[in-house]
Length: 449
Image (cartoon, rainbow, N blue to C red; front, side):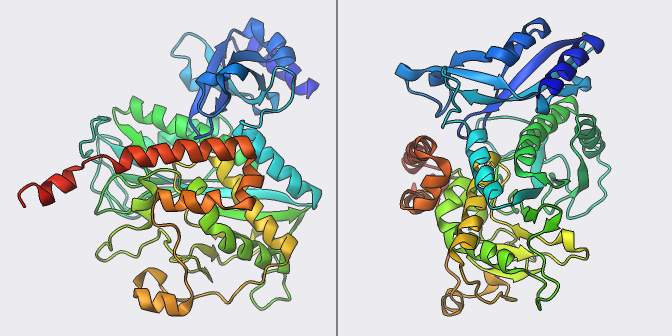
């Protein structure tokens, strides 16, 4: 760590870096930052930067408001494209501490660190590969009016539209310049919808990368005169934006999910991990799908000519894109993984990956049995067919998800009491705010009755 601090301080001087931004996230996954002068960074490494935690969503109550942001030098990265001719800038993620130097229970990064530590005690390293979908709009109005997409493209279309023709190329170059590797990018199904897939990394690095990704994508969009949105479901008649995530556990250099002797090439560890995800899915859905709007994506109206790739029911299958958990086909043993498809791209990645890991580890610890996989297009079945097949629904709206979460010992344990209680309180208020609104739909349908 000391060597890394020395590298950071030397780089600041050699590259004429004028601004160092210290990043962290609140409980809901909103990026926060404070800028420090390079001359102050050495003392920040030793003492951190104090701030008022009571002003940050979910961090502290007024009478315990003092908090400390401690920069993590291993996350140091120069942002060469943000200088605007007045010197380069850089950023580091922070761990949030109490004034006594203890990790804050309200810090989402600490929540994930605790989950990863529990996995490490069992000899596992947790890797994640996210597929991040989002929309590009011509305008960024926040008045609730329907936004206009930047193009009329569809799945894998090679768009050459003038408004944002070079957007993905520019975004990927910017990501790679800050050390984030991109595997794939393409146009998604809906007009204006994009997907960029990040290369797999350990879960903490991946969560940091997702927060950086959102920032860079929005910045690149603004330079193109357009607006990037990670809203789960902006259009009624188009698919929403998910963040399908591929998960794997490694024991040293070996993939713990692979078993060449198994008919499905899945180890007992992998099967128990999947069973854990399935059993606890209703309990953690409020975390992976945290907004009222998230459930418009999970339970969207049938879209003509399109398969619903947002899973509404608890099931798993090999290469089955309608299932909640999918096992992709793979070649090399180290590519063995499972894909969970319910997450949307507006989730807090630290909390989401913590609860997913917690559910999977619970399945391993308790030896959960995995039921046979499905080849059905679950979304195309009738309600009675799904009931007969045993496919239980995910929570249908935010308040149902919160009720399931509130009764979950697992989610409470993974998140810790502070984050668990605050999240429930905040989201129940969001539901009340939503529930009492009179919408354009209601006026259109009922005002002339």
